[in-house]
Length: 160
Image (cartoon, rainbow, N blue to C red; front, side, top):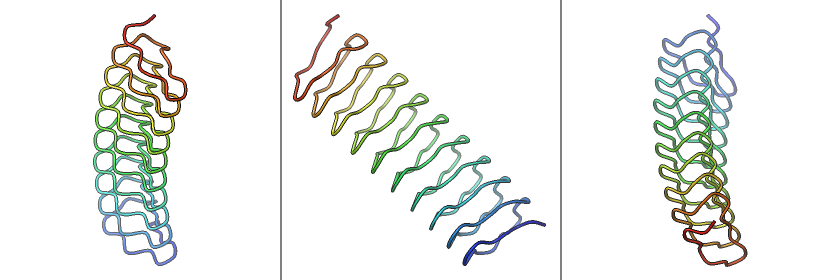
C-alpha cells in the first residue's frame, strides 16, 4: 500500500511503501523507501534511500545516500556522500567528501577535501587543502596550503 503517483506517473512494480513520482517520473524497480524523482527524472535502480534528482538529472547507480545533481549534472559512480556538482560540472570519481566544482570547473581526481575551482580554473592534482585559483589562474603542483593566484597570475612551486 501507499505506492503513489504524481502527474503522468508511471507504474510501480514491487516497490516498498512511499516510493513516489514527480512530474513525468519513470518507474521505480526494487528501490528502497524514499527514492524520489524530480522533473523528468530518470529511474533509480538499487540506490540507497534519499538518492535524488535535480532538473534533468541522470541516474545514480550504487551511489551512497545524498549523492546529488545540479542543473544538467552528470552521474556520480561510487563517490562519497556530498560530492557535488555546479552548473555543467563534470563527474567526480573517487574524490573525497566535499570536492566541488565552480562554473565549468574541470574534474578533481584524488585531491584532498576542499580543493576548489574558480571561474574556468584548471585542475589540481595532489595539492594540499586550500590550494586555490583566481580568474584564469594556472595550476599548483605540490605547493603548500594557501599558495594563491591573482588575475592571470603564474604558478607557485614549493613556496611558503
